[in-house]
Length: 572
Image (cartoon, rainbow, N blue to C red):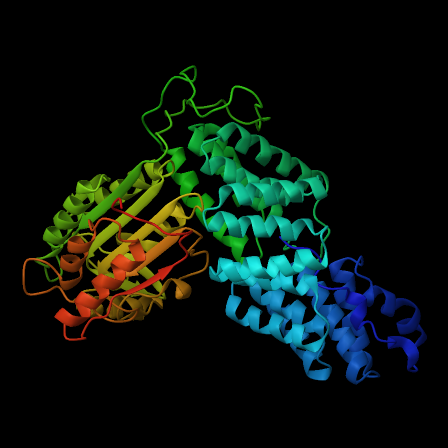
């Protein structure tokens, strides 16, 4: 969601001054270097010019740059990076660094993107567009203060930049400043009422405030605009706006309790081809939530009273489709919910004595500070799957959702799985089907308007390694020690805004089960969870220090956060 990266003509050197074939001068050149040329024709024209082998240096860099623009239109970011890199090798320029940085951003590689934007700014005069794009990358990293500073610079350079106001609003929302966020996004809408993106972001703000009617109305208008006039900005990933619009409206319908229309929108999200990391994350969420709302129970009559937060006016147009199914009553906003599972009584691998004790201790600590807790001990696959799905469904309308798991966990092909007590791995079997995919839990909770905390005290001296390796030999699956960091999870895995994930030990390392009644990690966690006025990341820092001390540095807890502001589990 950003505007054109830079005035592309900055790189348009006098390409055709050198002798060349008449066809290249009169036909291939304009096709290659005109930003309105369709992507395939642009790529073909630039490729044919390169094949002529008559250009060198800055002129050849120009051709590679424009071919990268063509790849960018198609959402093929690997090829964008390849061609932009060649352009930089031949002749470094602001435009080429900026283009490559945006491709890295769209792939979710924010650190590298920031480096490219830094280099772009070093090469030329200050550019509001480059500041804007670097702000996006800082925001992707979760450094919202630096993002806002860059958006300020962009707005200073161009007070009419609707996207900079919009994205500064998103960063303010991330820091908990909903009023400031709404003011910026409203300004973006005033600057350009035809843009669907600001409306999509305002949808999230209305939903965070429990105003589902306005959220759905804004989502509907955004979808209408995106369909009526698809974004022509070559730097907007293909289909990303429509995917985002459907996803946000679906979440608003689901939060309202209208599962029928939520299903329609989730299906629409999944029917669109995604190219960028953000769109793939949205589709991962849509896939999980579609499954949840499809088999949702506890319906209420459709003529039941609407929630008090639902405005009586501004009803949004609804999608056509199958006859609406009865919808459940929305849960009250502000609910803090927790799913606690402790698996130790394994039937086919070495049993663990402590996870049930750990789960009970953590559940007790959370109940003491006001959480509604779903607690399960020694769960088989069917029970664990149902309990997890029920929690994900209910958490859609919670303010804080916390998941704690103690027991065996395993990393397979870079994805993390939690192990039910009845799992039996045999060579040649569908190994991962018998486990609970952590990616599914993360995708199901990926929602910026809720705080999500996931804590895994898993991978305890895993006795399943030999079975994993044996099964992997026959099915090209590789088992690895420890659990994988979120950044190395499989395609579509997410660690969206508003999420903290904590492991009992560092990625790839083994957590200890402990010699007492509890593991070292859960013992420390249950002691510090209820500390009044302790911010959650400070709480985990205390837990880490205690575990390192009690295990004599054999175990170092690890966490990764994209939390939106400070979070206190126990009241100050």
